[in-house]
Length: 64
Image 1 (tube, rainbow, N blue to C red):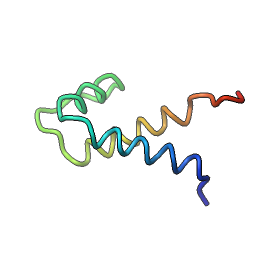
Image 2 (spheres, rainbow, N blue to C red):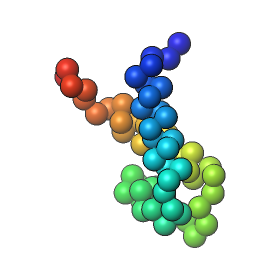
Image 3 (spheres, one colour):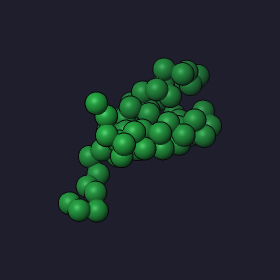
């Protein structure tokens, strides 16, 4: 069972990745240690969304 706040974070990450242009997806993946590719695929966007979601979940909340 998911938590509403986690769902909200996931939705924000998905929207963020969807709004990125291909070169921005490549830049973000490289920042996160994933080698860039010439052509950005849907799988790469999914991978970026997963990584950004993990990053967001590791960030401490307002209460610690």
